[in-house]
Length: 263
Length: 322
Ligand SMILES: Cc1cc2nc3c(=O)[nH]c(=O)nc-3n(C[C@H](O)[C@H](O)[C@H](O)COP(=O)(O)OP(=O)(O)OC[C@H]3O[C@@H](n4cnc5c(N)ncnc54)[C@H](O)[C@@H]3O)c2cc1C
Ligand SMILES: Nc1ncnc2c1ncn2[C@@H]1O[C@H](COP(=O)(O)O)[C@@H](O)[C@H]1O
Image (tube, rainbow over all chains, first blue to last red; front, top):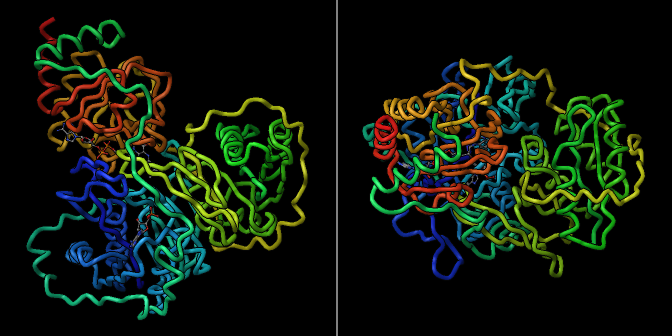
């Protein structure tokens, strides 16, 4: 099975405090730790496991800048066979549809039996997979947490729905699936694995190579545009306990007693 | 202004809670508009939902088809593309169904798409101004969505105050005949129910809930000791289950359990909306997190900025001394 997995380089939210930059136009990008989008890492692991069972190749692709090459190499160190970087100034400011348009162009350069995306990335949009499928007229399922191969025409898949229940479907190949975390246990990638793929060539394509009009992507093609970032105010906010640890704990125990938190 | 349609999801014969939240959101887009609803499905339940929705929506467009007895988003998308007028604005909840339907629908309608919207700030010359969040809720953004060719918008459940006015006096319009060809490449088979675990966290009055801040499976004992001292039960956020450190039945959130404790101790949990969606009944929430900007502090009652791996043992010690 030839599998294409779409991956994105994102600031790692468990490692970083994300704050708004001075002018509100962006987040503070200095000193951010980046990694591959968590969902995409599960998608790559799943693709590798499918190829281990059924044969074929895993190709990882990203739309990004030069920095994004590092996540392609990381996923290749995991076991993906090929990487493709899609890079062009014209891609900047793309909305979800723009990203899907770029990915469609590369997906059509070869024949893939299966295209995987993550369920969502850093902006929590959860849009690119479903858009890509609709543009390519392929069947789609989101939040997939189980994949079984029935034959070379069909998969049996599980979708995670509310309450941890699972919706089983049969889906025709080729298709696009967005992958939910927990579907597998992504393998560990060590420094040595990364070194091994350090010199593998990664082809880079721009709008011209993909036959994309600049007006279809980037800011020019975007119906959705970001205006600014700001700090959300959700509720009244917590009463922050301050002082020495002893004072904090004494106060907390008092509150817990009052609220029925201690038996 | 374009026609606005709310896509109503339902279970049994009862509309989802989102049904009247979508109405409230639609009125924020256009206060003067007559808002319509679309309900797709099959049989008696569908009819009951349509009738109920007519109290709140101007026209309720019913699509009755045996192929929709289970809401297969691929099938429903095809019907909507055939039935909805070009340029419509379609609202739906940002849940596991809306995530399945919305993005592809926007492509087929050639419309704008914005997802997981938490606020609507009005329209200025075809630019609909919306509020979203990024990075797990750590920052918010304003975005504009060009609605000149219509739009599909998914709304975060619970973000809009349901419009209970029931003052539309609307009618049900049967559009089933217009659904068109519904052949798709995905077939629904069955729903497999979540496994029942050893402990029922939904019954617990006090929960010590751990998130990715626990850092290592070896550290879970620290939370267990605190829970024991408090007479509480240990629950967790999703990454702990994904890592197979705890059973799925311990997971709090939209894709896990809905809990209603008196006291909820969020230890090293950032406070994503999917996690908070599983906490009901307005418990007293204590949050301990090393990041002072963690969104959990906005919804907690009391907060402590600390390393949970140091804080929890100290708290356990002090409770035991009592
Ligand atoms: C469709 C869908 C359904 C989902 N359903 C659920 C669900 O049901 N339940 C759920 O929980 N999530 C769910 N999620 C995932 C959700 O979006 C978040 O990814 C998840 O809730 C984050 O869990 P967390 O807060 O433990 O981890 P993170 O967001 O990584 O937060 C970890 C926090 O711990 C803090 N921290 C780190 N180390 C320490 C330390 N030593 N001491 C103190 N603090 C520390 C960090 O500052 C951070 O705030 C779902 C996602 C999707 C797409
Ligand atoms: N810039 C990108 N390059 C490659 N894939 C992407 C990119 N942005 C999003 N994706 C894919 O689309 C999925 C969903 O992202 P989103 O729709 O942005 O939430 C991600 O998990 C990736 O698989």
